[in-house]
Image 1 (tube, rainbow, N blue to C red):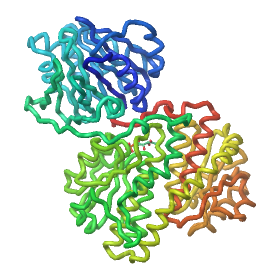
Image 2 (image 1 turned 90 degrees about the vertical axis):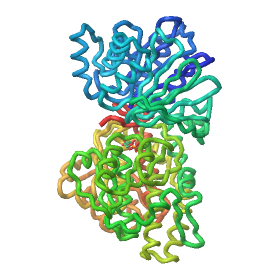
Image 3 (image 1 turned 30 degrees about the vertical axis):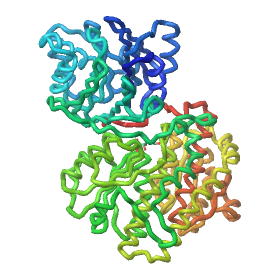
Image 4 (image 1 turned 135 degrees about the vertical axis):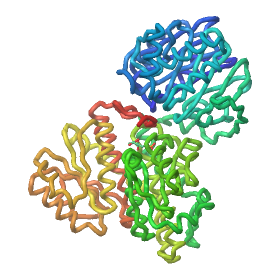
Length: 612
Ligand code: F6R
């Protein structure tokens, strides 16, 4: 939610900032803006809408500067507008701030500043922070870094900020609490960004600030300290990311590219972790805490959105294969309840971005209550893996399309591996059973390649259904979380209302919605629930619903019942969700495309949800 970028050094800042904003646009696209340092003043351009609109607005205006900060916004305080866009300036126009997060006590600070004569143009909490810094700077006659430090001692809430002051033209101050920020270190130049994607093409040396830390970049030098003024010796990390991973590689949208990447991303998430011959799984990241997993009486999964759906699939994995009860919690609910946690509970926090505020807060609550917490995250070095005791990364590579696709299947891969490790260590699965599951898992990328070949067929189905106003998705067992995920994918990118539901629950309510205009998508692969699903399908057919069925290759029975079928390679129940995810993702993609939606940047959404 909101992306910040900054540059200070010997190059032109503008192209670096704009390219950086484009890379971070997945974090929000309600408005974009830059502040460029001039000799003794700040040049600020900002515009409602996407980065492309900012570029058009700036056109050939002056952008010459070697120091600047920039922002792409997901609106929280104040509607999307030019005035509410960042950078926000102080009353004198001398201080500019870009901010990702929320200053929770901004109203009381604002009130105090108004009493001192300050006025406010925007509805943002960030303008309050800019004026607080200005007020402190003037009254204490301090440098920018000290003024920011004092201001942050007053501010309560989450922030990643970058600050400029017109009277210190060779300085950028960066600070963090709760929201992420990375600083790239070049040769006498520094790059600042909410994640490493805007930095990777200039340097692979980065530091991640910790909470309540600030970086003072001044006259070519970098100092890191806490906001309590303790000097820190930052750890410089090497980035492993590749630049090609951040580009569309010939695909019209990141989402489509990421759907097609799944054979690779699943392989990468398994690589080095499975030994089929010996029927073994090895997860280096949890080795030190293996006993906590082995002795867990129950597992609590914390996640949001698509990651929550991966967690729900994991419940089915762990309960069937490892015989451990699993509770899957919406992080946003868990954190505000009084959850009961026992010493021998193991908590798993799942998050693609590793930055989701609710998941982070929920896992911190579980930690406070004494639980051991594992993370299953995609973004290396992000906040959640740093807050957990142990964990395993999903090696899906950067996911840029706002709708999560390859992260979902990579999360399921890692969760299944954790489950298999536990099941075999506990003796719930024999060596032979482990060998069988692992070798089938190893073959999943190939089955996904085949499932991707349904693309043309799905395009035709999408053309017939694109004008539907509602959809129902039904599944049983491993197909139920998938039904939820299928519905979520469709609604978030096509804006069609869609509901996922256990097929057996349909008769308890949702069936009232079925008529000749209602498309009902069934996950009807050959498996444990096949016969029952056919009965549910007949119930929909009797009410003239439009049936779209995802079936196992060669199933002729469902073909006779359904209006449309999508055939996917047959797999065991446990591994079905990996293959059956593909048609869901493609169906949502093609319907959204035909409806003219902005697929990679759906309205009102952002990829990294760093607000509650
Ligand atoms: C759906 C989607 C969201 C995220 C959710 C959690 O396509 O992307 O529902 O899954 O915001 O995000 P992470 O996994 O980053 O914690």
